[in-house]
Length: 193
Ligand code: AMP
Image 1: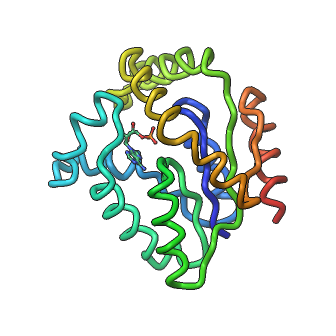
Image 2: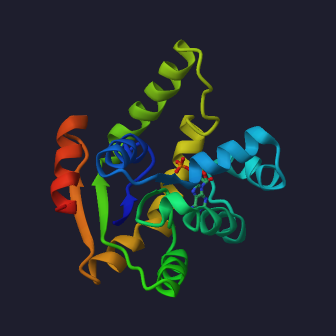
């Protein structure tokens, strides 16, 4: 089962991807997590991505594609995966289709977590405060300034994917303002497995 999760920053994609990953026993592939790990490890990809991510802009395609294609080809992703944070542009969605087609694979479902922009700032600031209080690393892009850049990137570059996948009959939108459990239940129902 190959699933894509879509939604603006702070919609809860990471939380839900983790739950779906457990439920369906397929890995969560988060390009954001992979890039943050590369930054923390100080790899060449991390050096390229660090400042761009801090500003809230999208990391260039060549960097992200190198990261995700290698990951999709790992044995644990052979039977499926939950993509969280990729693709973020129509061009990348087409590239993903191409990579999957090589192995006669296709996407099973694309799930959009819809959340009103007005609640997103609260959510990301709360995430930063909670991480800090728990002694966990605070995301450098969970700030008001970076969020506004991330929202613009989402609106301009990622939102067109909603039509792209909807036109192909793959999209289900779920209300992301419900409780975490209800969002999970709605996503599981949409997957229909
Ligand atoms: P996320 O954890 O999904 O919110 O991603 C955090 C940041 O990582 C984004 O704001 C981008 O700078 C970068 N990033 C993650 N995934 C992608 C992607 N598919 N394409 C470009 N940049 C990405």
